[in-house]
Image (cartoon, rainbow, N blue to C red):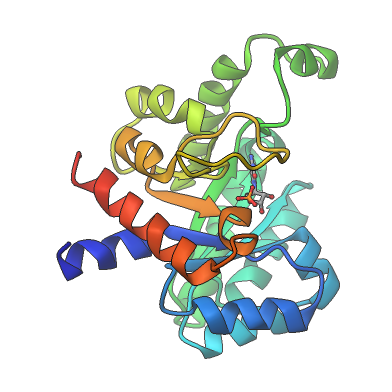
Length: 249
Ligand code: C5P
């Protein structure tokens, strides 16, 4: 496959750095730097280790997706967004259900802070409906409508408030693509290889090839790489699957 295609494919792969200690996280960073497009730092790792993990990733010239799903009053989320910009992250997210004002203030604060310190403006994403929730869970919380309807409703609200895209399950990619233009970024977790027999908590999964073919801009992959007998080979295999998906678009 052409090198430029492989390079584009690699840029679309986000590795979920799901560890609870610095040593383990650092060993993954060392192994996968240059082989993935971004490292996702979530609540477990950030709460355990703190900002130094982000510094370690950035020191190696790699990109960071800070997956802390901010959800609070507008002033607090705006200040958290500024703190994320000061950490020089490339992507971070907020909960769309925090509302229009919260999202608008976060986007404005991130932009202003990035411009002030001449940092790159990070990509800001919204989480719509957690993929762990089904229609019955939504009704119980007090939301009306199906998960699909909520996903579109919240994605539209978040887009109007200024986000660049959403985190969405593989099942929702086509629905989102039919409602939003190609510039709206879709980041998709829950990726499993075609032949995977792994038994874990991801139920509604899709292969990397299929997710990219359907229109995902980035895919988030954790355990299919971290629990593989040969993680680097698994990572390369997924990059090839992404490249295959890209050739269909
Ligand atoms: O190991 P696995 O490939 O399932 O990792 C997926 C990553 O994406 C995890 O860090 C998980 O928290 C995250 N995620 C998810 N489903 C969502 C949102 C995020 O699996 N809806």
